[in-house]
Every structure is written in structure tokens, then in C-alpha cells.
Image (cartoon, rainbow, N blue to C red; front, side, top):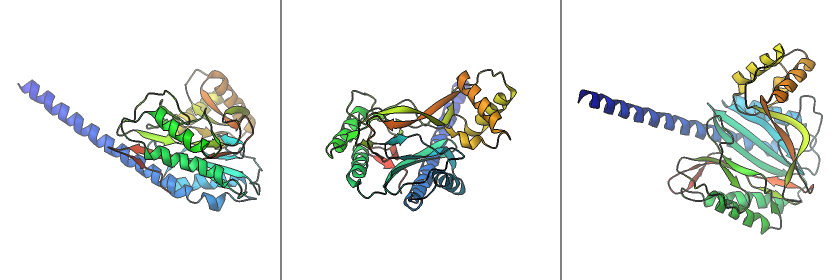
Length: 319
């Protein structure tokens, strides 16, 4: 009997610990979302004609850190037909144009719990319906999210909202489940109708990000890559490559990072370049190529991170 009582007490203790851990995780997700939303609110003041891409990215990243968060991924600044994954390199001199359609995507984490959010700024003043298409699709998707809803049905609603306005959803980009230190945690929410059968569960965290396209509705990789993430820790030939891998493991874990973030690791850019090349060739790193609409059409994006509650979805990244 004493043994059974000890086992029961241990089980209750474990359940209590798990409950506390879950509460802490939810608190961290909420805080990461709060910071991300508050900073995204400042984007229209930063994404202005004549401003440097690099200055905008570094300003947003500094704001995240100053607010008590950590960078979940590099600030993405994707313009016009570029849909995603562009972050400026260290010597980038590009300036925002007078009529650019600018998509800003930022991520904040607190102990690995991520708030991922994005919006589109139409500097031309002529792409309001395109921007509205992605925003309306996001609102419609969130309104139907609750336990038991199939992700394929959410995609159908996103597609309906975008196509009803004369545009195409980008079919090969998706929303994604988020778990601690896992920005893409294995479950996707399509932007089109599909047979995807995963049913939302209470406590799930998802980033919902409809992309509306005035082009083909599909994206393809370009040759430019500025963002990477760790995917394995193989044996490496060069000493400097091993040092770089250690730096990445300790600072970014499995979360995406920018090549420009590594500029202070070595004095020589040549050393950094050769070390990064070995990490890529060895399979240590996963590259995120810049993505472009294959029809070269303008693209708008809107994104929130949400938590699935008992009968609805709570937006964590409120602006």
C-alpha cells in the first residue's frame, strides 16, 4: 500500500509540474505575441520611401530586443513580387521605392515561444484591394478557428475570400503550427481548399498567413539566400567551421538567423564565407531562398499568431 501511495503522490506531483510548465509556456507565447504586435504597429512609420532596407530591418530587430524579446527569425522585408524570406545583407544599399508594396514579417520569442506576425504597406496607394484580400482572408480564417475544425476547411475559407476579390491565394505557402523553438512544427494550414485532415486542438498555437497574389498564385525559389537554420551537427573539416557551428547552436538553436548576424564571429569576411559554405555543403544548415511569385505579380501578406481556446482562437499578436 505504501508503494501505491508513493506512486500516486508522484503522479500528482508530475501532473502539477506539467500544469505549471504549460502555464509558463502559454504566458511566454502571450508575451512574445504582445511584443511582436506592439512592434508591428510601428512598421508604417519605418517602411517609407527612401528608407534603407537594412536600417528598417536593424531598427525592428533592435526594438524587439529593447522590448525584452529575442529574435525568432530575421526581419523579412519583401517587396512587390517577392513574397517572403528576404532580409537585407550587411552591405545592402537598397532603398524603399515610392510605389513599393512592402511586406514586413517579424518574429519574437520568449524562451522559444514565438509570436510571428506580418503586414503589408502599400506605398503606391493603388493596391488597396490586394492588401484587403489578405487581411480579409486572415480575419475570416481566425473567425472559424476552434477545436475540431479541419485545417483544409480553413484553407477553403482563405481561398474564397481572396478569389472573391479577383486575386489568387499563394497555394504553395502555408500557415504553420508553432511549438517552443519550432517555428514550423509539422502541421500546415493551407491557403487553398485541401483535404488536409488535421483538426485543431485546444492549446494549439498557429501562425495564419494568407498571401494574396496578382500574379500566378505560386512562388519559386530565387538564387538569393540570406536566412538559414540549424538542422544537424555533422563532423566538419575546418576549425573555423566548427567554431561557427558552436556559435549558431548556442545563439540560435533551431531558429532561423541571418548571415549578417554572423558578421562579428570572425574578423575576416572570407573566413565567414568559407565556413558558412562548409556548413551548407555538410547539411548542417537549412537555407531559406528568397521566394518570388512565378507570374511576377504583386503579393500582399497578413499574419497573426493565435492560440486555440475552448470555442475560438485568441489572437496573440494584436497590434
